[in-house]
Length: 100
Image 1 (tube, one colour):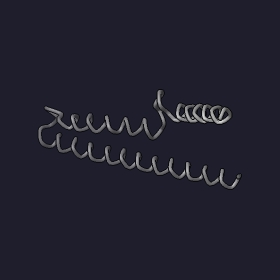
Image 2 (spheres, one colour; image 1 turned 135 degrees about the vertical axis):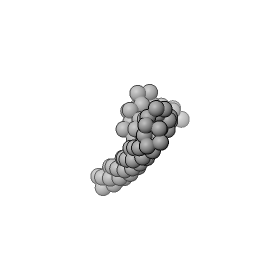
Image 3 (cartoon, one colour; image 1 turned 90 degrees about the vertical axis):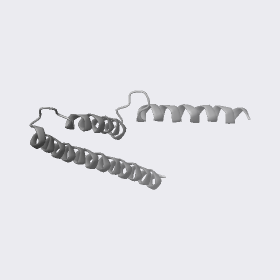
């Protein structure tokens, strides 16, 4: 039982590291590409119209939701909610099993 628990913890940690790796890769790509777009924008028109901000804003929304998912920042349906719901459903199932 203990070996299974360690393996489960290892798999969860490995999954979390993979999610973090994907998030940081996405974030670093965002910073790099937006910086290049800002440089191009500056060289073309000297920031008289900062069009690169449209790309930064649009992609930034995606980065925000990726961060919410990666760092479990969702207050409504985060990991703690998920764990509570699983426990609740397991308890309900156990109660119905006793009556049958």
